Length: 229
Length: 361
Image 1 (spheres, rainbow over the protein chains, first blue to last red):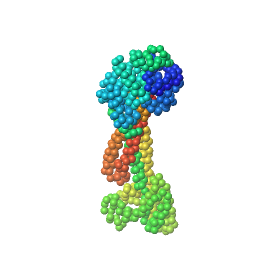
Image 2 (spheres, rainbow over the protein chains, first blue to last red):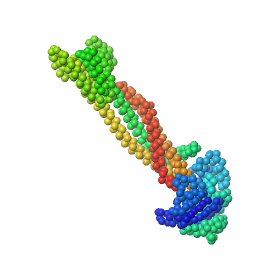
Image 3 (cartoon, rainbow over the protein chains, first blue to last red):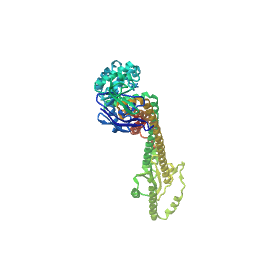
Image 4 (cartoon, rainbow over the protein chains, first blue to last red):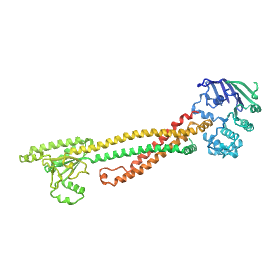
């Protein structure tokens, strides 16, 4: 599903090497944690999968498509295959919960009928049916992240990227989000989650890829935060 | 683009206008000012052209006869004059025609008493295709006059010689009432004067003076109007260009502000997979609506104002007799679409320019 081959990223402005010759395979339906300290290359990894940054060398293949050769105008179509949630939720503050989620469907020009049918289903899935008319600033952090998750999965992308999705949440709410992510993963979506949350990684017992100074230091099939390969 | 997506963009675009109310108002005002000037200069240019056209068709050359040429000779002269290049029409006016015209001009029947002993000369009204060709036609007429007189001189007897000395007097002769009367040259064509048929009257100095003076006068008016027209056009073009640049600048700023406020939103849209055009359209529609509103306002104001001017001018019959203004509907059927197109372009260009760098996410 996701394949990195000898990917190196050197930022031109400061010469910093973010990724160094990284090769990695993530299969369809896998749940993978990307862990590592700040500056280890986690964020660059996520950004590359969204084609927000391009590798200096190497290739990235997503769903059979080499995204390093994509033209600018093709990027939106890549991003429709890759749902994404962030630590800071990134919701449209002027739109209601319902509109925030429906927006992702409007972008792909879904029919109003389809939107009216699907949005409530997904809101039910993330447990926010009763908050459909609320605005983001009327929601708790956990609720906002649920909206972001609903938006990320509404177009049924094969891949879901989560960049520190529990970073701003208390442990209990964080765990609720993790349960949701696991639920989404069970439905066949590959989930790639960058995180610092040791307790979550230890508890989930999923594949853990540890980044260190731009290289993959460890890659454990079913492990915890600090497990040796 | 699907219809529902278009509806979505229009909704978002109009929401954007109200979100930045003040900046939108400023943009509308500047677009209005720009288009206002465009409309006024177009009105001026179109009307100056129209007036010039009317003047050109009015200004003709008048050739008056003394008593000598008989009808046969006049017919020959008419043929000769028709041969002159640029002459489009020659109309003969008999003494009775001249009297009728004078009566109509003075709106008085008292001139009727002159009918039996009519002092008014017979004449030709000669139309020339373009005003700039008038001097050539006049010199051709003078040649005809000279050769006609020469042909007469060959035939005259000695008694005539005394009378011809009187011809050399160039002083205008005044009658008892003090009005200037034409110096009648019995031998042939008395004078060549040019005239605007509407303004010629007995006692008019053009009637006795050499016609060339009158030609220059008409040509001067035309030249003056033509140069005013050029000045108006150049001036308004420069002004329009400056205002267009300012409008685009202000619209760009408005949209930039909107874009800045909505930078996060645009970012999010990009992450969710919105295409650049999906993001652009609401802003472009915002710009177009601003441009359209900015165009409609001056159209309405100018239409009403222009109608007022036309009605005001219609109150002065002497202006009406020289030239008329184009009717408001005539002018605005052309101007309104031009104004709307300019408004739309200003809005769209302003929006597109201000967006590009924010789309690179």
